Image (tube, rainbow, N blue to C red; front, side, top):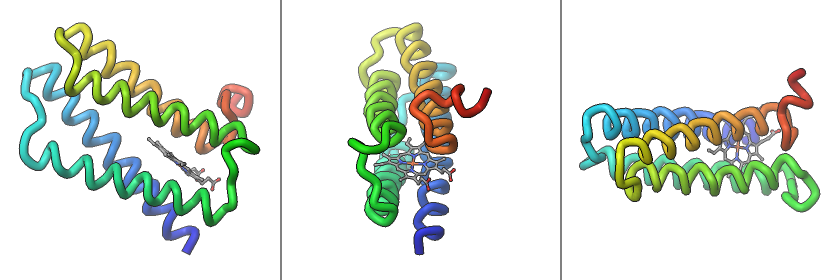
Length: 127
Ligand code: HEM
């Protein structure tokens, strides 16, 4: 069961990242705002992502106050959501969109590295 939820979490992460890059690059390169399925599907995927995340936290009995990497991950997820909103909704110019999009992708990469290394500062584990 744990493994199934973990795989579901990873599938949701992959889809969420790919959908964000798809919507962000179309907006920045072609000026096309997300419409139709591009607006609906990410909400479904992100809800599943958070559900599987909470499932893992409960199944593994992890407390963010005891595990620095999990606390760092939660803060970074809030940042990723914020940068995503700025990219797709609030940015008023192309340069703002590009800046917010870059911040969101770097934050996403940081979250993945934190998850894999279980370190709030992944270079400690990687170097
Ligand atoms: C953009 C959001 C997220 C990304 C990119 C992400 C990424 C990942 C990845 C790649 C793994 C697999 C790690 C491995 O097997 O080595 C993982 C596992 C996990 N994630 Fe996430 N995650 C996200 C959101 C969350 C959130 C919001 C939470 C907590 C509320 C969370 C909690 C967990 C837990 C507990 C595990 C299992 C860790 C383990 O087995 O060692 N994730 N995540």
